[in-house]
Length: 229
Image (cartoon, rainbow, N blue to C red):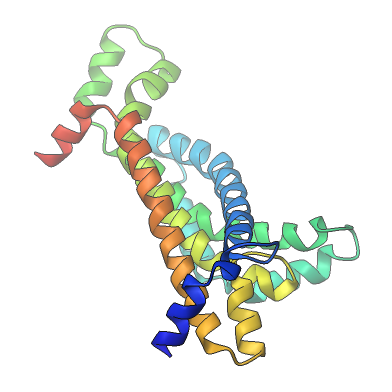
């Protein structure tokens, strides 16, 4: 089994062409990035509001827990059945997948955002108010930069979950690395399934490394030192 999987992975034909690993990885990554961006557009503003005002924290915690308990596969089937008659083309299949991934990504992004804002030193807020800064200025110039480490950690966690779960896109006929899992199982080519799982894990690690590099660039070194101490 291991040798067959290795042979499949090192075969140049496995990587090229419309159904090759490169093309499927790009499709997988495109769907994942779209889902993460949409989740961030929803969760980051809400998280900033909750962290800054302290309002609705209990609701956010309960919603995050509820979203985590949602069965992704069941939601995918329901969303596909509801949207398929109303949409056409690839959108009819891709939109349900993206919606499922957004629901999966919202909790870690939301939690990371409001936890990052709540963790800001109250003395920093008081000093900002003391020099006459408005609440909006405090949020964007004091709290938001200080919250970036936890915010980006939430984004990284969400992205890892999205990439792992985006394999279900193959169930409704969308491309992506999940094709190797579904097609391999259907044809009983278990080396293809194992190879596809390995590629998904490698893609997740690669994306996480890229996001870690972005985090090092955008987060102030002073915040990193403060967190370490």
